[in-house]
Image (tube, rainbow, N blue to C red; front, top):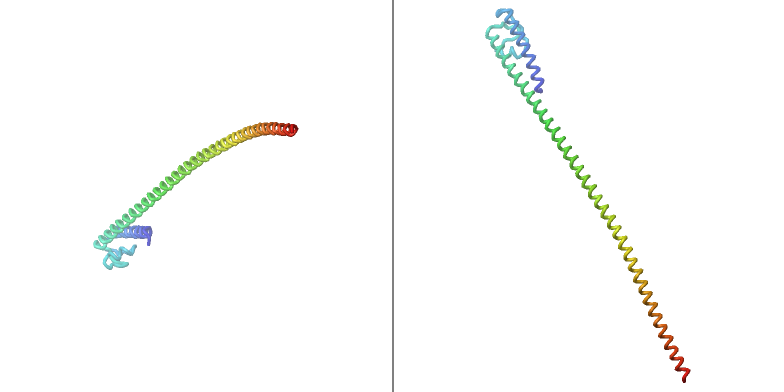
Length: 180
């Protein structure tokens, strides 16, 4: 049986006992009285339905009513405390969820910012590397062309010198052969 069921049952018994007490006061101590609540007869030392309400039974009924009221108040206070505890837990859980959500959004924004910065830096570096590589390739090509032209020029000069020497030797040889 839950806390709410006991509280409702005790409240009903309390109300019935109050009505019985009022009826007893109005009708006097000598008239028979019907029991309105099951707790009141049990607490009245065996006084059952139709028992005569005496000052002792009235005192016992008052005591039962007082105990019932105390129990009802205690159960009500416990239920309120439990409800407040539940609300506090719920509020704390919501705060924790909101804090976690805010932290995760901040971390996500920070990660996105770092990602964007790294991407921009990598893009800048790659473009610089491409520009540097193209410049180096052009310089290497220019240097190679210059060396090739220089080598061709040197080769042509050597060829001209060799041809000139060969012609001289040939002429000398021909002259020698003619003189003989």
